[in-house]
Image 1 (spheres, rainbow, N blue to C red):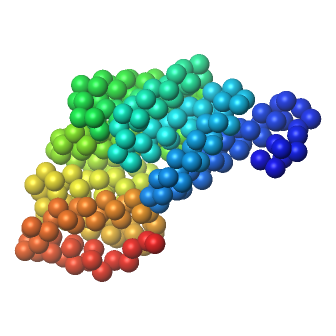
Image 2 (image 1 turned 90 degrees about the vertical axis):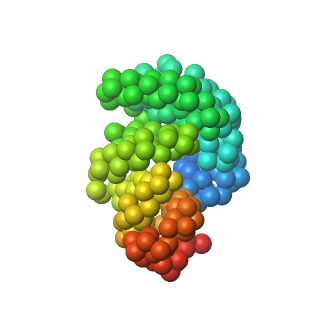
Image 3 (image 1 turned 135 degrees about the vertical axis):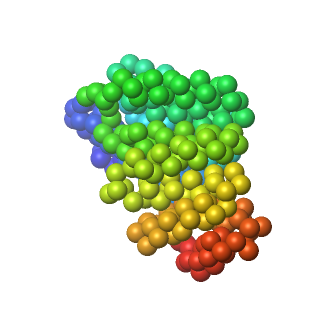
Length: 261
C-alpha cells in the first residue's frame, strides 16, 4: 500500500500492485479465518474487495467474495453466504474458469444448507459437480490449486452434515479423505475430523472414535484451531458412549492433547 500511495508511473504497474495487495489481504484474512478470528478475517476480505473494485479486477473480486461466503457460513450467517457466493459468481462469469464457478457454486450450497434449504443446496451442488466435470483450463486461478476431487467431496460432506444427513455426509467425508493427496496432511485431518463428527452424530460411536484417533495421530503435524474445534464437538457428542472401549480411549487421549492457542 505504501508503494501504491507513492504513485506508480504506469497504470499497468499500479493495477498489478493493487491485485497483489488484494490477494495478500485475502491470504491474511484466511489465516485469521482458519484460526477462528472471524472479525479480523472479515476486515481483511472487505479490504481486498475494496481494492478489487477500485481497479475493476474481477478475479480478485471473485476471490474476495468467495472467501467472504465461506467466512459467513462458518460465522453463522448463511444468508450472507448465499449472497456473497452469488456475487462471486457474477464477478467470475467472464473469467472463463469452470473450476472457479464450481467452487463458487459450492460456497452457495453451503449457505443454502445453513438456511436448511435442501432443494437450494442440492441444486447448487449439482451445478458444482457439472462445472467441475468440464475439467481444468488455463483460466483457473493459481490460488485454486487446492481444489480437486477431494475438496469437492469434502465441501459436499459439510453441506449434508449441516442439513443433518449424517450417513450421506459420512460417505462424502470418507471419499474426501481417501482421495486427498497424502502430502496434504492438514486436509486429510480436516476431512477425517468431518468424518468422525458425522459418524458420531449418525449413531456410530465406535467408528467415530476410530476416525477421531486418526485425526489425533495427525495433530503433531497440523496446527489448526478449526480441526481442534471440530474434534471437541465430536468428543461432546461421544460423551454418552464413554463406557465403550474405543470411545473411552479417544476421549482420554483427546482430553490430554494440548490445544493450539
